[in-house]
Amino acid sequence: MFRDRCPLLAAEVAPAAAGGELIAVSPVPRASEVAERAHRAGGVVEKVLQHEAQHLLDYATGAMSALRYLTRPRDWRYGYQLTAGCRWGDFGCEQRASIAEHLWLLEHGRQDLVRDSLGRDPAPIAAYRRLIPWAATRP
Ligand SMILES: [Zn+2]
Image (cartoon, rainbow, N blue to C red; front, side):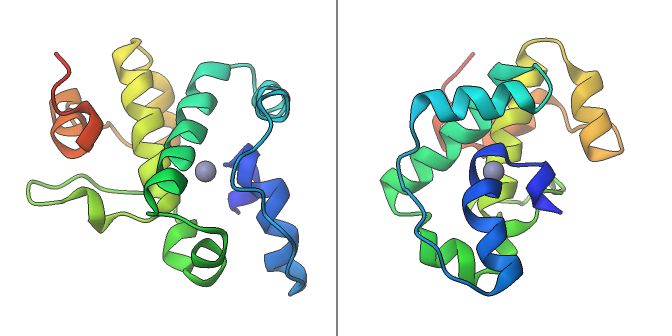
């Protein structure tokens, strides 16, 4: 369940989704809270921050909102498959955040962690850079 995968959103959204009770979801988390959750997630803080930064970007651009997140199960999926014709908009909120997180890991030589997460070898790093709009111009 996504509770274990997204330290920021899990604490805010999962209880509401599980219990059917709507709670407020802060669109801008406190930095200390993000860092604490990242720490508890296993010590690879930067990858978690990359994941959460994608959520913040999605909030800022309107690609994600609390209501949208709660009402679109598609946004709760983490697994993804990069194919030749796939586009950024084909992926849900958690998939986009996972893809951004995985690009960071690949750029930092942690293909092993991406493989563990996906359960298979990841696509070449160039495929991630082509897909993610903000990464397209990176070397
Ligand atoms: Zn997430």
